Structures are given as C-alpha cells and as structure tokens.
Length: 260
Length: 65
Image (cartoon, rainbow over all chains, first blue to last red; front, top):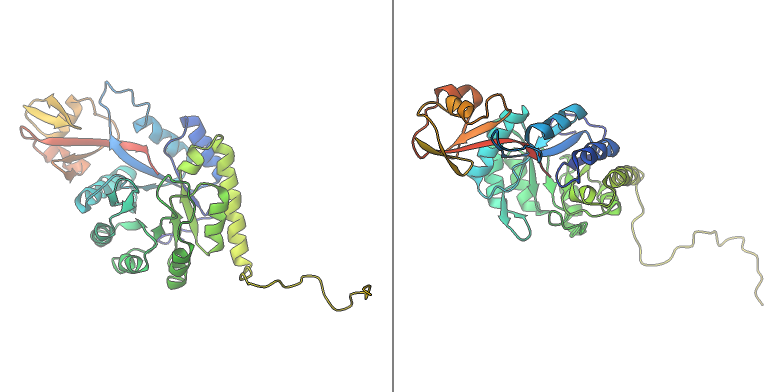
C-alpha cells in the first residue's frame, strides 16, 4: 500500500537499459509489475529521431496500462530535484515522485541532507515522496518526519548487482518502522537477493539493471517475480531463527538399539 | 534573439515561450519546460516572455530506473 494505493504486485520495475522497446514491454508484462519508474530527459527537436525515448517510449508505457513512478535521477541539488519533480508532476499527471538527490558519482550514494530537505519541500507541496535513501535509521526517521509515507533504502549501489550489503541495517529499519511501507531499491543482482529482502519483511523491491541487462530480460523478470512471491510467503510463514547447534529433526525416542 | 535550448544556442523571434516552442518544432509534443532553472507550467507558457540569453530546458518522458 503506497499512499493509499493498493497493489497486488510487490515488484516495481525500472524501464532503462533494455535491449529494445519490445523486450522492455515483454519484461514488464512478465514481471507482473504494476508500477514502473520513468524519468525526464531533454527532448530532441523535430530533427531528432526520438527513437531512444520521448514520445515513442511514452506510448509503449501508456499501452501497458501501468502506473508510473517518475524519478529525479541525476539530480545533485535540492533545487534541481524539486524543479524536476514539478516537471514530472505535470508530465505524468501523478503526485508520486521517486526522490533521488545524489552526492557521490562513484557509488551514486544519496546526499541524505539534501534528500531530507527536498522531501520536506515536496511533501508540503502535496507530492507523495518515495525517497531513495540509505539504510541509515536516523535519516529514515527524518524522512518520515518530513512527510514521507514510504521509504526506499538501497540494497547496494545502483546497478552494482551486489545484493543486500547491510542486512543488519535493513533489519533494524524494518523493526523500527513496522507500519511504513519499505522498499529495497537498487543494487540487486539475482532473484535470491530479492527473496532475501522479502524474507526480512520488506514490502516490495524496486529493480532495473538486474532484469534489463540479463541475457534474457523477460525470463529474468519472471524469475524475480517468483522469488519476490516466495520471499513474501516465507516471511508470512514465520521463518526459523538461525541457531548455533544442531537440532535433530528425526525423533530420537524409539530408535532401535542396534549398537554393541 | 539568441537563447539556449537544451544547451544549444538557437535563434528565435522575441516573444513568448509558447511561440518559441512552436517555432522550435515542439508544438504538439508532450514536453515539460523550465526557463533559467525554474519550472514553467504548460498553462503559463503563453504568458511567459523569453529574453535574450535565456536558458530553456525542454524535457520528455524517458526510460528511468
């Protein structure tokens, strides 16, 4: 449930880096995602082909009937992010915004100070902010204070395919915010990473590169969807806590005495 | 007059943002605009005058993660 919107799929899918528009459309359908992320970029004039994105990209997304979550990718300042959000709200006709304020270009690590400030400005203006943040608990607290009703901590740096870098931190976040929808956003590589996030009790997973740049993006989209369902089902079924010593699963009582 | 459109220098007749967009070939396209870093909503384009040296950004929906 994101800002009052009930969804049946727990997978949010990015739309970038697919080998072709056809593969993009097929992957979205195979994933079952009801929300896809999109961006805003400079539009070529009449002389531009527009093949990369723009109007033709938009007609593909519209034809799929999915909800869009526009991002502020690449923004490094509060002002840039806020202006981008304004443009996105008009363009996509949605109050939803995946808020990214990036500090470090190597790790694409969020500038959490700018993020909190931009989240406050946008929330006050009526936006429904999905902040791309780290797993830092105090920052998450500030974001909630600023008006965010969803948090999206990274698993690992965007596109790195490393999985969950800090399971302890993500667990602590889940325990601290039992009622805030939490989405692991970015850094996943394989479906088991997504299953692990869901087993921690996360509400959803947002990914892009792991599907788009797989050898077969459509099959990988399906595999992620299955892993996310399995992980969620496992969480709901209350998994065992790990322990140090063995516990025999076969009853000891009644074993035949066959020794000397 | 000379303005910057998505970083490129372009020559347009003095006038409003709405007229410049049509002259530049964006008429009818689904775009959002900003002038000198400030968002200009679509309904305000015909009341927004452009000045020499203005920096115009014209963006469209694009793939994103």
